[in-house]
Length: 461
Image (cartoon, rainbow, N blue to C red; front, side, top):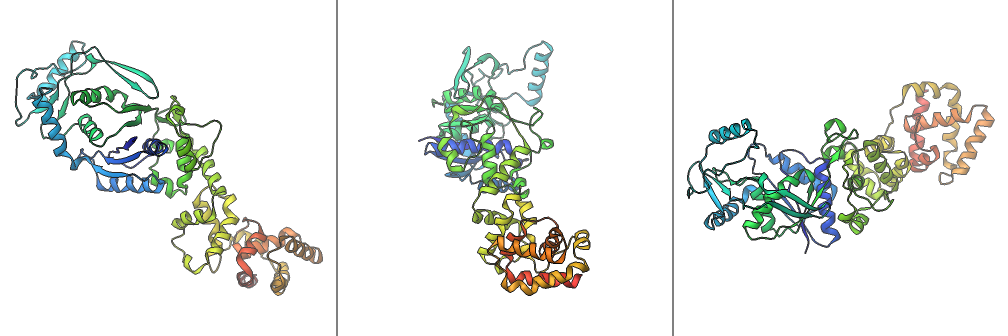
């Protein structure tokens, strides 16, 4: 069975780049009917925070990237790492080093002065030291010329072994280093494929050395290109690199963000819009582009607008409720709310916009745009509004053509422009000069609400 993992460090919120890595691992596992594991690399005690854990979990759940196992926490697995470290020491594949930070720093400075790349010189390699206070455990890097691995995207990758010294796998305080903890986790969790950013490619040789020392077969590696800003620089906050939950606050649909993230460096022919089910069906690593993907806020907004326009109204209502917490939605029927959504969905790029547009359906009294009200709710329009109230019982709200004919006839008989009549009614019903089709609005509001709002407009005049 194919097993992938997403191992965030809870030292910050989940951002676009991390979310795309999680998505690619999740899609690869789902496509192959495999398993997706969540674990937190939280051994950095100072910077790891519980609120970041909670936020990352909330973001993944909001996106719909549910995991099959976990979440695991490295901080709860220290004994496992220590047992594997003991095994390597007893087999003579690792040794204890008593060199202090000051000594190591001095060695580093001397090498730099001689024009050499700083590396540990093996001072303690043959001292046969046992565990003790202030002693770290180093792995014995084998004397080989190069380390080779096959990357699923890049093919054969070769690293000169001379670039790697006997690196520390367990610190003097008994905690594992990043490379060691990651490898032990991947072995014990049965990870078969590691899909991660190409900024990790230089970590792979060290990790392969640990796999080999433990007699374990390394997983398959796929290093995906980074996400860049629109200017080609590394993605940062100035490019809009907000946390994933900030995109929820800004009114993006999770499936729109999933669609956009999947298309950042991956494609399937000319298809632009994908449901989650289509992504699971079509996703493969062969179609991942080796060129860095560029983040485009306008493109993301266009995809969001597409999915708002083309989503089922019940799905939209489910996500729109988050932005309508200040309204008592229980007093409205679901049918009314869904009909209201239908009138604004083609005009909304975000759920925030939709919530603003739909407000007039949810209040007892609308707030008038004063400039519009002064312009259109005038004394000459008063008799026409009164007539509409009188004729309301006979209004064919389901038949837009007949409604239009009624308003045209009203305009012709009164000599007042149809636009002025329509705008007066629009302001009376919505409070705004711009809204969805007037006849659509009337159909949703119903005769009772229309009558109340027209009578209030008459009082205003």
